Image (cartoon, rainbow, N blue to C red; front, side, top):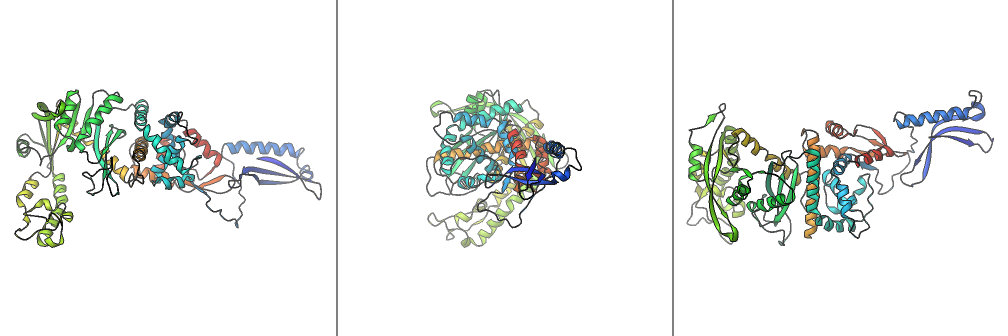
Length: 571
């Protein structure tokens, strides 16, 4: 603000007023608005010895108050003004929290350094930030992401073509980026990798023909489309360590060893205990763990176990009941495993393994409830086989005897065959309902600790749900392999940032809820570079408190917004 001394042409008198200067958002020209009309200088001399000195001091005090954000702002609004076409008056500010973590991890340094030898006039760090911010707050295609780039207070001086070109560059540095992030988290959050959780999921692609990476395989969503397998390693805080992509036709159980080899080679980990689901519980994986003096905690299928383990599980001897609905026992048992040695030569060895088995009545009830729809479907199929084909019999066919399909049409053949419910199989399954088993190399640990270790696996399963729902990792609107790999890199970085934010608010809110709230922290441009905010909740308050940003302001000037965004870039 400053004191304006304007000479009136007709009378020659000087009129004093206090005005505020600002830069017009659309025309980019300097403008001013009158904050306070004071009067003619000659009239004011009757009240003040020196009106100019007096009001210049008043302006100085007003400017000082404004710095402290305590002075009211007077707006001059033209109610007949129209919006300009394609004007971006609405912007997000919640992404400041994401930017804070991005710069804490020094990802800006990483991508800026990697651009040194790239002959390009666009900023790859700016492109990566846009991809991350959009993936977390408004996931969409790369084209849509580019079109919505003005949703953020960032300088995005690049084209859509530049964005696509940068994907090959990102893929080239994908493994280095993962290791960089790991080192930053280890340094800043004292990451503990004594326990490493690992699991595998896959993502299907709606394409006609498989290619080198996208192959036909066992899809988690029971779809016939080509898929990509992803193995993900995670720490005890629930923050991802690294990921690796595999061809769609590779089995889950073959992905663990390549991932562990890479972690061992690049990540400088000490002794680790791998925690994984029953699909990874194989002789090859156990041998790999134990040969390197590492450990494992795997779930063990009870229904698919050998006869000896089934007898042990069903034998009441040794169980200790905890209340009326839960019992548990354990033993150390010599397990013979078969594994592939050099040149695919099969070898066997015996390992001492602790087996912890437990029964939960809640799990028992849940298992029967989950099976009920399949049984009902099986009964309907037996009653009306003409209504079903092989493709539509999924789940129910497991409980039906004498069920034969035509190899060409997939239709059920009833001539000479009489489908019926397999009561014997159903009885055997129900007998095992509620029983679970965990096997581990850590036989010196207590049963409680082993179960606690295994229960942490739910976080990695949740991470997969986050990528598929909140981050909308698929559908992938890309066809080149290096572009696809770059897409998964951006999703991984987004997941890491989301998990760190979740950790900072003590895991009180889901990733989906945090991102939903931050997306709502948006503002609309009024006048004089002033923005109006219209949303806050307990989540934004918690996030803001954790990272030092006030998301509760109703009005903010552009300068104040940019100051905050500048501060978060300091990490």
